[in-house]
Length: 196
Ligand SMILES: CC(C)(COP(=O)(O)OP(=O)(O)OC[C@H]1O[C@@H](n2cnc3c(N)ncnc32)[C@H](O)[C@@H]1OP(=O)(O)O)[C@@H](O)C(=O)NCCC(=O)NCCS
Picture (cartoon, rainbow, N blue to C red):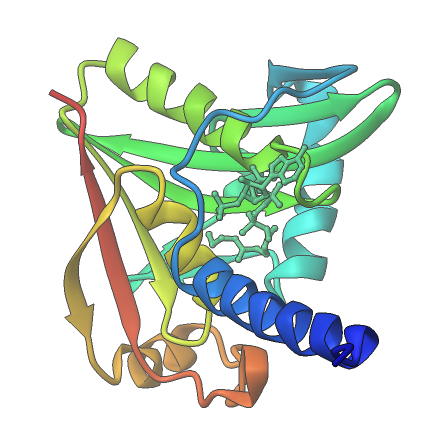
């Protein structure tokens, strides 16, 4: 007797799709450096400073950034801009203290093209050249993309500073109460990468 071919195929495909989707969500391919086309990463120049201030104000709710109870002014920090042709498509700022380099801001305006990866690598290289042995960054508990991004690039969660944002809001009241994915913004998550 002939089998109902269409129904059988559909059943098989559905199961395969389900398995594929399931494993794809859990097992992402190992990180490999993306290849960027027509992009260049250049250290922040004097003429970029106004743009840096504008980006930080738009992306981080004010021109300052607070991490671990300290106020930073990214427009006066060293960093790198990613250019795509004539357009600025990404920014990283950082600060060096003793032998540690902290990433203060990292923003991409052309997502999933490798922009942030390249910027992070430029900052890491600069940190090594400055004699740093650690690269660290603070993100907030709602920023699941950043947690994935940094961990896939060699960072480990070093500390969770619960309720740290209560203190940060005293210095920067613009920090929202609710963050990405409607998650209450409460904690600072400290990620570290050993550069040795
Ligand atoms: C998190 C953030 C910086 C990532 O920026 P991005 O430019 O999209 O980052 P990349 O393109 O380098 O990598 C992102 C993903 O795209 C993938 N990707 C890169 N190039 C790709 C390409 N050509 N095709 C398909 N995927 C690509 C990468 O593999 C990566 O996935 P993974 O993290 O699972 O490995 C960005 O989403 C952002 O600006 N967020 C808001 C600010 C923020 O939260 N900053 C971090 C806290 S300081």
